[in-house]
Image (tube, each protein chain N blue to C red):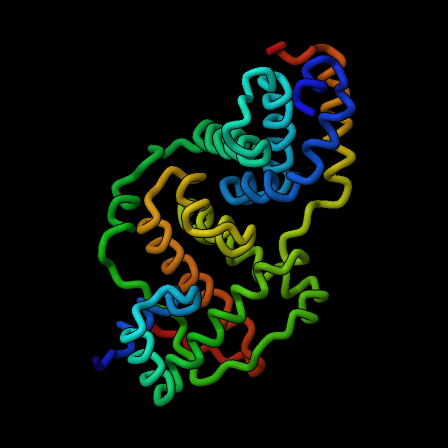
Length: 84
Length: 193
């Protein structure tokens, strides 16, 4: 199976997740070995996924836990949970 | 633990929600895009959960239940805050077979995770995520930030696994298209498509 660049782009996400039929995967790898553009798109996409998964990228705001607890404490003073 | 909380040991509720804080915050953030709004929604959701604790039957994990409450709360707030219809024609068309193109590069030098110590890089990634339409942002945060699997993401968002994969593919290419040109060492922007 010969894949063009657009077809490769459509499958990049599944390729990264290892969610491709072996024959499609093999065709993609053949294409990626010769196409600098698609190889760079794959590398950049994979790198960006890696960066956004890092806890520093989307960390809890400073003081989040303390404010959550303070809000709960002040509200829960006024009410009790529904009993089972 | 839940029965002890409902019996009045309120202090235990804080222990119960502590491990879920990042998950619920990211869930609210995926809908609302701003930290302040997300934080408020988390507080509201935690209060709701506390008050409804007696009805929690343990059929799912507590964290899953709390995340679901948070998602509903965030979506309700978003609906109240925006004037346009909840589901536009464009939303339907977006899940059609239209083309999604990445930023076409000739090369890519890997950005190491140490670079995340730079606030500027974190801001580029956060801004890019905020630019995505809500339905793509929700999937991307569930799958790539919270690192849930496809089935869990589908269940949380109430969509099929196939739809998760489709939205994920588009979300990832959109992120690549926005972020990659900004992160290239030479600052060249040969984006096309």
